[in-house]
Image 1 (cartoon, helix red, strand yellow):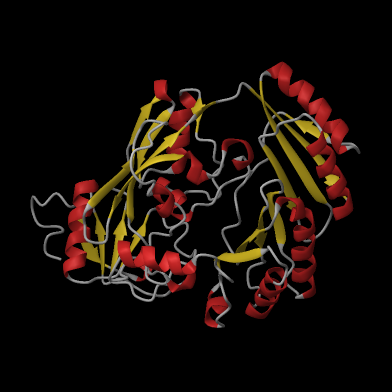
Image 2: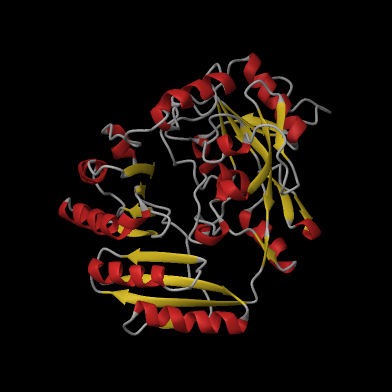
Amino acid sequence: MTLVGEPGAGSGALREGTGADAVGGLVPARVARPDGTEALGRVMAAAAREELAVVARGNGTALDWGGLPRRLDLLVETAGLSWIEHIAGDLVVEAGAGTPVDELYGVLAAAGQRLSADPVRTGGTVGGMVATGVSGPRRLLGGALRDLVIGMTVVRADGVVARSGGRVVKNVAGYDLAKLHTGGLGTLGVIASVAFRLHPLPPALRVVSRALPSHEHAERALEALRRSTVVPSAVELDRPPEGPACLRVVLEGTPDGVEARAAETSRALGGEPEVADSLPGGWGVLPSEGTLALVSVPPAESVRAAARVGGLSGAAGAPAHVTGSLPAGALYASFPPGAGAGAVGAVADGVRSVPGWSMALLRAEPDVHTAGVDLWGEVPGLPLMRAVKDSFDPGHRLAPGRFAGGI
């Protein structure tokens, strides 16, 4: 790759890989840091000529997500793609893939706006957030992360810069390729920038919390909430391995409006709920250590699924902390660091045995990988996914093996 790092090439820096650059135990021979989208295109074109396997890295907070890469020749850092263009009047923002999420959210908040997606990791970048595609608690009202993406610039495996969507919320021209890349773990292309639709910051917020001694209490509370007229921004379960679970209902709007809705929510939940005017610390952030699973179920079965995951993991000797959005049917099971492959596999098998339920290991500890535990379970549409991979990355050089089915 003589192009990268040549004087005047404008492609950024190229260096040798070290142990600190390893992904899944593989150390890349080289690490590139392009300083812009066109430079990224030149890097990827050079990688294509040399048939190099490529993995992209933002701040490295999710490099251990997904499967282990089968090959890694070149690590592409996106730190040089850090910029923000905020079109406040249109409620739209575009940001480079290497932009820190905290920086983006700070810029938006200063203008009285927000991206209605709670970050699930600390220290992440825009590209990493979109490549992993995980939506936080407030997906209930604002929509999943993929629904907030209105445009994307991606560099293909051959180095061609491809753009889809744009900076207009109602842009419907062409195929919505951005949805393929959201959650794709970088297996279809390297994200260069993303455009999002925004929402105004609500002037007031209330969080109504109620302890739940049993899953029966949770079922009754959730059903009462469904029958009420309240439209919450989030309904989040927090079920620790020990002690009672907690249901948190987030309400946003005008000061008078949230007060009235908080009162109605308290009546619906029953018991003695607590009402706060701010989100709890660490809201929506998933643990950064240990095996982490996403359990997807029909929303009406969310409470039962949380109880089953808790019971199965406890019986296996690795009690999991279960959190997630009950009305969305999206639960996260965080296993304690060091949880054995046998325990994780037993929980996965127990969950997947229920019709309509699935469990994907978003992040697995090394021994879970070594033992060959199935990370994904049955994946609907896998043949179509393979066809898309063959079309976007014929040489299977982009993060090979990190996605479902070894894609």
